[in-house]
Image (cartoon, rainbow, N blue to C red; front, side, top):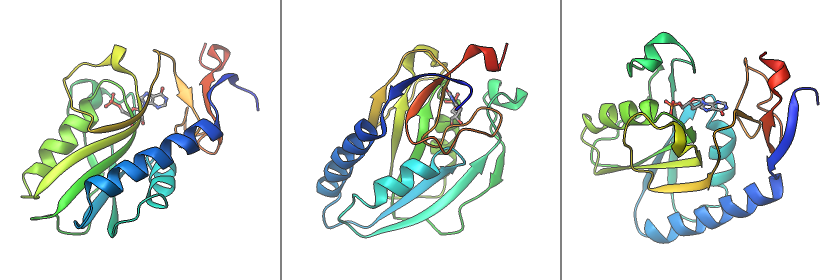
Length: 177
Ligand code: IMP
């Protein structure tokens, strides 16, 4: 497909990692009910794969925040476009995100959901780009640490496209030059 510079993480590697994460979470949450909050839009592919590797009862909900690159984002103010529908009071919650970049989205979401009185909140990110971090966040579970490259595929987009690529790829600079 046009716009791909190279494959960074293949779908096989992604699948293997998601299985490992699923096993770990299933062990850690044995005997507990878990609510997974997927962050739209990018988190939906990872969430869909992850839930099928879990052996514990889970409920799923989604939250949608303002898109990457907006001015509100760089100031750390994230706008909620769609909130979750279910109550998380006294529940075990895990935020499921595609990538931790500056960390602003995850920091905001965790603090916001914390005000609703959950039993606890953890964060899982498929990818971590620590070199770009602006605020400190704890990733309780993560898939891969990646270099400072703009990546597409496995749910991640550039200008709304490429989410459907099964591999995680580096975007060709020609696309945004
Ligand atoms: P943060 O608030 O800066 O951590 O941004 C997280 C969001 O930015 C992610 O949910 C993605 O939607 C987007 N994002 C960050 N890095 C990339 C990338 O390399 N490719 C595509 N989207 C990205």
